Image (tube, rainbow over all chains, first blue to last red; front, side, top):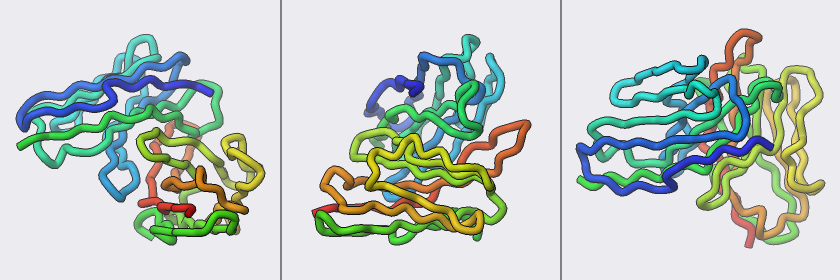
Length: 113
Length: 116
């Protein structure tokens, strides 16, 4: 299957700091998505990216779809305690079953007040 | 309903017993997915239903796992003769798929399965 490498695996930061995480793939993707999962809940969609080079913001979150179509990053500016959770990248591959997503292993974010 | 509903939210079962996990997708969503999330791991694809098409079962880890979707809505994931390695959170998701754009999934809160 298509592999996604997500890094870092975990981050421990102070409130107010900026955060950056990224995802790379061995295959080209048509769509990149970023999800956040809080304890006891399913992942929630944060940002969806549809075109190579696309840069999209959602509040303090910014994500980009890499030019090569094989990578994406997510930035969080001025982190706050409620940003705590696991962030997953996901990609929809070319030629794959429509709608099926491949997920990274996640980045566990901890924010100290 | 307003969201994807999964039941039960927690299930503890003895090794060797069968379990059934239920998923109610968002009304009108044509696609339904099951994923498994083990501790500290990413999301492992299990099975995908889309409309009346044959399901994509390529992610099911063994023939002890099966799933059905009745009437294009509710889905049940069945695990027979459960093993301890089946312990995980089982997540269901649904999506509204069109030919032009993929809008991502909406996930349920999951069923935490513990096999003792």
